Image (cartoon, rainbow, N blue to C red; front, side, top):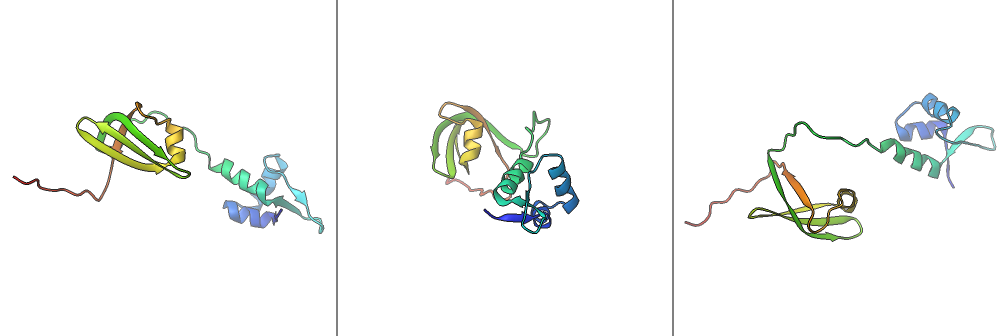
Length: 132
């Protein structure tokens, strides 16, 4: 298993060497002692710690949004593979198809029959004129 010097770990996390040392002293991050007597962090330990740092708090209820095209509808189809998910919704007469990560679909608990709101914000919207 690879071991990373304190300076390497700090550079990968985007913090100072002193911050990594404090985290080790506080017990937030464990370290190993190398043959030369210097401290290091195991690669797998640092990877897990880095993932923990990126966990974000729940956003809570929103009070405003910049998306103007919001349509409430019902989920009519969910197709998931290893990485991605396709979610189809029916919002009144409109069919909406969203491609998202499987992780997002799972976290939202999307399944056929779920009520959801599609927010559409795009700088690329195709407008067509129907035949008269």
